[in-house]
Length: 137
Ligand SMILES: Nc1nc2c([nH]c(=O)n2[C@H]2C[C@H](O)[C@@H](COP(=O)(O)OP(=O)(O)OP(=O)(O)O)O2)c(=O)[nH]1
Image (cartoon, rainbow, N blue to C red; front, top):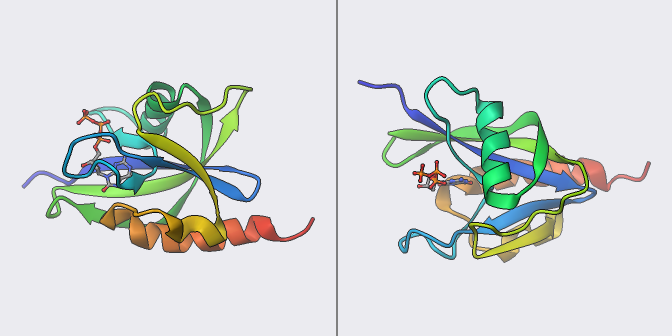
């Protein structure tokens, strides 16, 4: 048995909002929402994969923070999804270079989009993280 392939996602947080992205492909999951990211390549660290994917998909530089929520099995256990907080570095704003749409969501808006199933428990944990930044000061 091979160990599960790791898929990483970046929860890019600015102020009280997180960046969510609607998939453009493949057709089975197009229109579902996710965190920008993708598969970690052999020999690549999870942080390096996130930095590479955010440059490719959004045209931005990021700094990777803490893991949010559980590592969630995807594709009948062949892969595992891990999402990390991230912040933007530099002035570039995210652009949907590969996604159908991008949206900045506040904690109370997280349920306004249809997430990929694996993301749902992670979004639950993310609500608490965004709640922390909601506090004054
Ligand atoms: N990027 C990302 N993928 C997710 C999330 N949730 C989730 O179930 N997935 C699934 C969708 C895909 O089946 C898989 C990631 O594939 P991908 O197509 O984004 O990966 P990749 O950019 O490395 O693509 P490729 O090398 O296969 O072309 O993980 C998520 O939040 N972000």
